[in-house]
Structures are given as structure tokens and as C-alpha cells.
Image: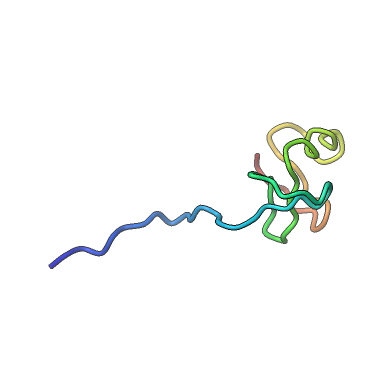
Length: 67
């Protein structure tokens, strides 16, 4: 018997990242399960209001997310 191909429990996100702040397509965005996405550049501009270092708070649903 052949064993089925094992895949990890995490799947790499496929699709488009569109920043909610600048509305541009990006290669990578920090994202929240609620659907909010923010690109690296916009995140750096807004870091003072949404991050304390190792975590950031989603402005839409207020979940605490790890970096």
C-alpha cells in the first residue's frame, strides 16, 4: 500500500493580499481572521497606534495578534 502524501496542518495562503489602508495589491500583508489586512509600509506608519512590539491589535475586531 502506498501512504497518502502528508501535508502540514498549516496551508500557505494563496491568493491576493490587498492592504485595507493603501488599497494596493501586496506580496505580503499582516492579516487577521476577520479579513483585515495591512501591508508592511502602512503597518510601520500606524505602528504607534496598533502595536506594542510583539503583538498588534486589529483595528476592525480588536483581536490581539502575534507578529
